[in-house]
Length: 427
Image 1 (cartoon, helix red, strand yellow):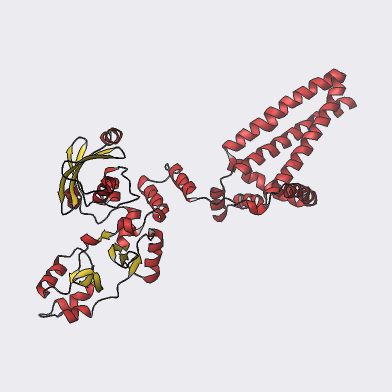
Image 2 (cartoon, one colour):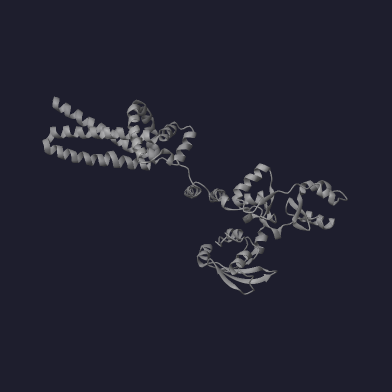
């Protein structure tokens, strides 16, 4: 009877050890599988289990040392118990059978099953386990500390330093991947806004500015009646004021400031000049992310883009940058129709002055934008000459035919979309 009780106690102890082995194996997988950003969010939201898990993962060497210490101690003890029980039940043959059975049981119930469960539901396993590990770490700290000293010493000899790792910082491209993978939780519009913010550094003021030849401003050499007409019909709240050419800019006029004198029976150019603000210049090639910060710091909304010689290339505004993030919100649909007109199922008539990035956005095309900013510039650069009407070319798979050339530039071109793009648009 005493032997039966002793044998039953040994079997019960063996079961407890297998449960502990499953706990150590599963909790290790769960803690290491936690999404660090979700964990940080939960910890900052006040979740105690998440805070404890985050604290443990701040020193992974200690956590891993504690888990391996416990898991190895449990597995070795289980092996010894199986040896005792097997010998009592069947001698040497029983020992061999018991070892084989223990290996199978540990593999299934103490390793594979708990680790699979932990990988599928890491938070459900890791957060409760964190409470236990915090206590165990305090109890066995001297042993864990000594183990870590020796393990870290070996890694140091091998040339691995803690400073060699960069933590869990994400690059811009990795952030893009995260945003795309979160598509089920973020609407398409907001997802595109986040991607646009990440891409601001790739886009420069040259890509979004109003080009030199399209700048609308006030020439002080013109008559007052002509100036008044420009002010009345202007679609912009700020206008550059210049003499003769835009390169001789005198200042920037905010039309709101002009309202007081514009109601007078008479106003002079001197009155107009007294309202001018100092022009703000930015170099071409400035990334939009940088320019957005500069606008914010200087409390500005309007800048003149200049090249290395100081010649004005265009105008960029705060609204232009914001539209890169949130999309067009001031574009006149009629204006877009004037620049792009569908001629047939797979052919469009496109104005040569259209901005390539805008054309790609509207048509979901992929015309190259690394060089020239307009369709005319792209064609002229490709041909290295100003083409005549009827000239045909193919740029990156887009067949283009020159319809009209005027004033040394391509005025109108016919673009045929590649068949792949055409099928996508039709669907």
